[in-house]
Length: 259
Image (tube, rainbow, N blue to C red; front, side, top):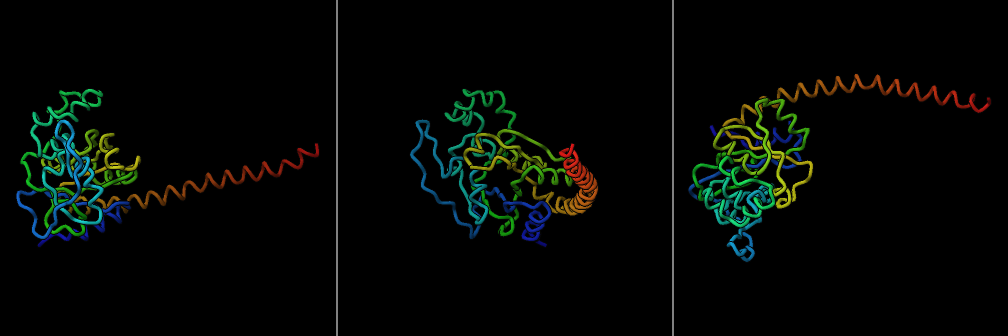
C-alpha cells in the first residue's frame, strides 16, 4: 500500500509546529510523469561559464513550498558546491570552478575538505521538489526547515540525529546515501542565496525512516507536553513569591516617607 504522504506531512507540521511545509526531494533518471519543469530566465554566464535557473540548488527549497516541479542538472549549475553534493558534478570538475576558487581564497573552506563532502553517488537526470503532502511519487528525502525548538524536538524523537555545518546542502546525500537523519545549522553561502531567516536550520530525513520518525515524534511530543505543563506549574511558585516581595516593598514605602 502506498504511504499516505499527505498524512505524514500533516503530522510533521502539527507535532513539530513547522512554519514551512515538509518537502519531498526525489532523484530520478526519467522525468516524472505529469510534473512540469522548473522555468526561469537564466542570467548571462560568468567568465567561467556558470549560470543556472537559480543562484544555487538550495534555492529550490524555498521555491517548492507550494508547488511541485522538476529540475535538470543545468538548473543547479550556478553553484558548484551544490552540484557536487547532488551528484551533478564530479569532484575534479567542481574543484576547478571559479566559485569554488573564490570560497577557498576567502578561507571559508580548504581544498582538502572537498573530498570529504558527502555526495549523491549516481548522477540524476532530474531532481524533483515539492510539498510532501502532494508528492506524486516516493521521494528519496523529506526536507524540513526548523528553528531551535523544533530541532530539539526532532532530537528528542531521534537521538542519533546527525548535526552538520557547511555546506548546508550536504545533508541531502547524508540522508539519501547513508540513510541518516541529519540537521544542518546552515552555511553563509546558502543563507545569503536563499534568504533563509537567521533562526532557521534544515533537516533531511531518509524516506525509509519517515514512518518510524513520525511514530517517535508522537511519543516524544506527548512527553514534551507533560514536561512543559509541569515546568509551567512549578514556575508559578516563583512568580507568586516575586509578587509577594514586590507587595511588601510597596507597603513599606509610606512608612519610610513618614520617617
